[in-house]
Image: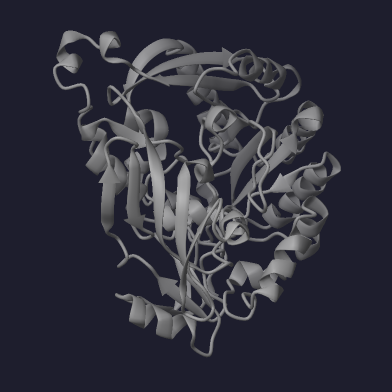
Length: 441
């Protein structure tokens, strides 16, 4: 069958197997074709599409134990982050780190070492992981942690499933008093002002900016910076305080069909961005919002990837190191604005320091944007790659669908060590995705 990631590009022919137990999974792993594990299919490109066989891990979806003293949850890799929240937020626990969707599996969160709005404070998802159990190329299951099988642990975080099949993990949740977020929205007239706000509010737990990629000159990079803290019980009104860990359930809309290819163009995106920014200015200031609205606004629109049409879209996400971030981001946004290809889903975040074997984050600023697949999209993305490289940037494999192997190697010297590990432990011949083949990993 043809399979893709959330961006619906590229479409790759692969065979899919959905094992229900360890025996069936072991037979697949030790078979005659390379395999890759796939969770809920929310990585954007081809990182969870098998070069030979794709393993659908959604049957491994059980929560196994929870320690109410430490907040440690042991669960199988196919458990959705949203299921964790549904089960444990009513008990006063929330993920320590979460990306912008709750519809990912724990295995996917570990494989991509996802990050959230609090990386500058709490690091990536791996900072909440105590241990991982992984099926290797011989079908045997090994436990890896910071002390046991440490190299396997380090390279599995951010290793995109290329070190083995993640089966189970122990992760730590954070204790919260309420299901509400104290949000503060601050308009920034340009990129420089937005970055100044990130630096000024470096002690806030959560920070993220929606950024207008269609601005020019004085309005280049104008943004809405959204800060957040978990609200305490004392900050709720009487009605909310009566049931502080229940913020209610929102209904979800659904995009019923693929939008026509002409629907997203420079004029519609410019109009949307203008309206969104003005609404943000009007609503600026402090407010109490529910956890779902703050962390997962896109999850309220099911199948939102249909907005980009049948050809799908490509996401570009890079991180520029702190020392060159202002110049690099200015050049990136200028190129996007000049091309008239602005994204209405553009996000800017500040990363804190991170020392890891193969994970994406490093201290600096990360910019993420979506581009519908059109005639010149790939050319623009190549240009953005070159700009990011010239400023010492690197790229997020969980979002990648078209990068060149040589670009990855120029961006990230750690690739050589990752390849050495894969060869030495017999992983390369056994675990392969369409992405790893394209990038020669």
